[in-house]
Amino acid sequence: MFRILVSDPISEEGLAPLRKSEHIEVVQKKVTEAEERLHEFDALLVRSATKVTEELLVKMPNLKIVGRAGVGVDNIDVEAATRHGVVVINAPNGNTISTAEHTFAMMAALVRHIPQAHVSVKSREWNRSAFVGSELHGKHLGIVGFGRIGSEVAKRARAFGMNVHVYDPFLTKERAEKLGVSICSLDEVLALSDIITVHTPLTKETKGLLGEKNLAKTKKGVYLLNCARGGIIDEQALVKFLENGHVAGAALDVFEQEPPGDHPLLSFDNVIVTPHLGASTIEAQLNVATQVAEEVLQFLNGKPVTSSINLPTLSKDLYEKIQSFYTLAKKMGMIASQYMNLPVQEITVTYAGTVADLETTYITRSLLAGFLKPRVASTVNEVNAAMIAKERGITFGEKFSDQTHGYANCISLTVYGENKTFTIMGTHIPNYGNRIVYFDGFSIDFAPEGHLLYIQHQDKPGMIGKVGNVLGSHHANIATMQVGRQQAGGRAIMMLSLDKPLDDELLEKLVDIEDIESAKKLEL
Ligand SMILES: NC(=O)c1ccc[n+]([C@@H]2O[C@H](COP(=O)([O-])OP(=O)(O)OC[C@H]3O[C@@H](n4cnc5c(N)ncnc54)[C@H](O)[C@@H]3O)[C@@H](O)[C@H]2O)c1
Ligand SMILES: O=C(O)[C@H](O)COP(=O)(O)O
Image 1 (cartoon, rainbow, N blue to C red):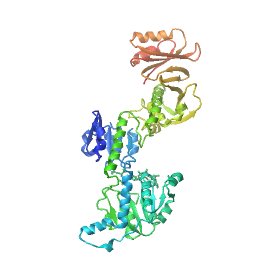
Image 2: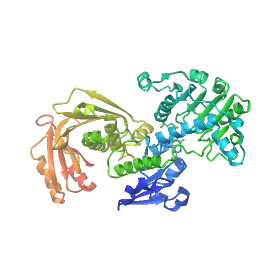
Image 3: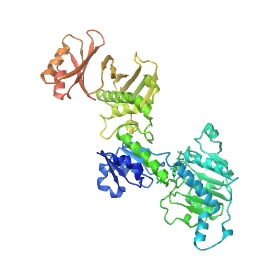
Image 4: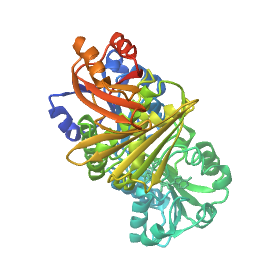
C-alpha cells in the first residue's frame, strides 16, 4: 500500500485518480493532525501553507515524494528533501493564467479604487469624486520577472494599450523579441514605470529587491503590485514610501508572513489586499491537482516524473530510451562498490556510441546511487546520490568518447581508490540485455544481475572443475559461468552466477583452493 498525506486543500476532482487505485490510501489531514501516522506516508501533497522542513522530513522516514500543487516551493526545504532522497515535484503551469488574471484584476482595481469604492457604496455613501482613477491605457508597466506569469501579464497589458518594460536577468534577447517586449535594466524599469508588478520567485537575490534603495529610484506616484511572493517588495520599505506619499498605492496578494496579522500595511486606504488568491480558481486548482496526481502515479509506477525540482526531468520518450542504460549503470556502480571494498576518491564515467547522445546526467546519478548504496546506511537514490558523494569527498565526472570498443554503445566506469584503480565496461544489446564486457583488465561477457561470484586464479587445467566441486558439494548451484584470461597460463578469471547468495564460509573454502588468488561475491 502506498500512503499519501494531503495536508493542504487540494481539488478532490484532481486527486480522484489517486483515490481510485486500490493500492493507494489517501489521507486528507493537516500535518499536525496526522502526527501519529507521519512515519507511514510515502507521499506528501501540499500547497503553500504546509512547511516541509527538515524536522518534518525526519518524522517521515518513509517519504519518497513531495508534490506541490502549485508553483512556489519556498515552503519546502528542497535541500533537506534532496539530502533525505525525497523527490520534490511541482505543478508549474497549472495556475499561470489564474495568477496573471488575478494580477490584472488587482491592477485595474488599484488604479480605479474599486475595493474602496465598493466599501463606500455598501456603507450607503455615494461619493463619486473621491474615487477618480487613472486609465491603464498608455501607462508604462514594469514587469520584474518575466517567466510564465510575467509574460502572460505582459500579453494582457499590451491588449490594454500599455507600454511594457521588462527586467529579468535570465531572459534571452530572442525570447524577449518573440514575446514583443524590450529588455531593460532594473534601474530603467524603476525609472520608467507608472506601475510595477513583480513575478519572480523568492530567492536570496529577490528578497527585498524592491527595498528602500530601489523604491527611491521609482517615479513619484508609482503603483506597486505583488502577486508573487511576500518579501520581494520589502514591507517595511513599502510602509515608509506609502507614508511619505511616494508610492500612490499597492496591491498585495502575498505577504512576508501569511496571514499578515495586524500588519501596518493593512491600515493604508490605498493598499488593496487579497489572501493569497492568485491560484484560487476552480480551473487552476483542478489543473495543479491533476498534474500532481498524474506525477505521483507515474512515480509510483516507477516511471519518470516530468516536473521535479531536484531530479533532472525526463520526457516519457527519453525515459524509455535511457531505461536500460539507467539499470546497467546502477548495476555497474554496485559491482564497482563491492569489488573495490575500500575508500574511493574519484569516479569517472565515460559514455561512447548511442548512449552518449542521451540524458547522461540521469544515468550517471543512477550509477552513483548504485555505487553508494552498499556504503551508506541512509536512503540513497538518484535524488541525493550526487550530494552524498560530495559529502563523502568522492568527486565524479562524465566523459564522452568515440571509442565504442566494437559495441553500438558503451559505458565505462573507472573508480580510483588510494592504491587501486578499477575499470568496468558495460553495454546494452537490444533484445538481448545488459552485459558487462570488460572487468578489471579482462575481456568478459556476463549479465550484471543476481548472485555473482568472481574468482581470480592462475590459468591452469582443472580449475573450473575444482571450483565446481566445492560449490556442488555444498549445494550451491551454478546458473551461468564466464571465463576470461589475459594469456594462456597467466592470470585468469571466472564470473559465476549462482541460484542463491553464497555464504562466507564457502567463500573461504574457495580461496583455500590452490592457485585461486581471490574470490568475491557480488550481490546485484
Ligand atoms: N499569488 C499566487 O497565488 C501565485 C500563484 C502562482 C505563482 N506565484 C508566484 O509567482 C512567481 C512567478 O511564478 P512563475 O510561474 O511565473 O515562475 P517562473 O519561474 O516561470 O518565472 C520567474 C521568472 O523570474 C525570473 N527571475 C529570477 N530571479 C530574478 C531576479 N533576481 N530578477 C528578475 N527576475 C528574476 C526568472 O528568470 C523567471 O523568468 C513565483 O514566485 C510563484 O511562486 C504566486
Ligand atoms: O506558488 C504558487 O503556486 C501560488 O503561490 C499558489 O499557492 P497556493 O497553492 O497556496 O494557492
